[in-house]
Length: 287
Ligand code: URA
Image (cartoon, rainbow, N blue to C red; front, top):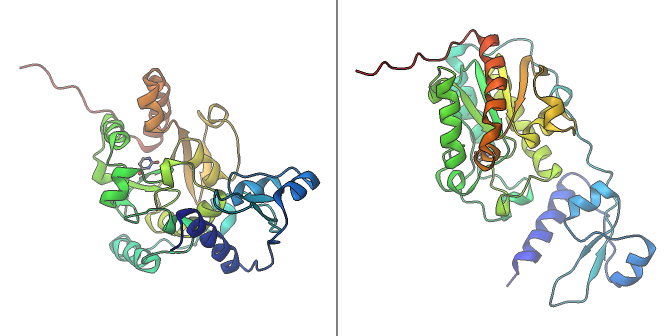
């Protein structure tokens, strides 16, 4: 029977073969020897790819084996650079069907290692196919993985409140994530996972054609914009994403951990509201 670590490594091997990389590891070389040649990393194959250093797969039961990854570093590419923005928008009445077609194409996806990392449900997206406003998070957590719907856990409740404070209902916006499968332990998606999934999120954005996209947190901002910068340097100004204006704000899960930043997030949402001509709902008078 295959152990969990072995299954994961196999998934990575198959993933790289799928993208045309066949000759990427040397077997049987003692880890110590190779590690003395170059400083080795043991975290993940992706960390090795990013650093250009060898990946050491250490399993407790077997002597360490060195796998030298020869693939070029995974480059960050913005969603604007990935593919040209289609000139014509899909008619509003056809957008739901277009989203369903993307979902069908995803199927029971095994395109990246997250398929083998304990996923229960693929979390496609939720909301109006004609939304003017789209939120993009990082990846499903445990609640989303169980229900197959984005942002339904505690962070989702806060996101619902943020949407309500903007004078909108959740059903009026569209919500998706950088990756559609839960990363184990809620870790940040690896570049290879995000890049594999991006083709589908990109098409969802092109179908919905929101006027504004809000990137929730640094991971969403990094992958959508193809830049690795601090959240504070990206907030408070407009970026572009597939014909939409893109704003960056804090992830609701971060706001749950540090509620003092809610006022800052509200500034970001007010910038979005001004753009969309939204006014906050008037508070109900006490009877
Ligand atoms: N966090 C995310 O980034 N996305 C979800 O869907 C839930 C929590």
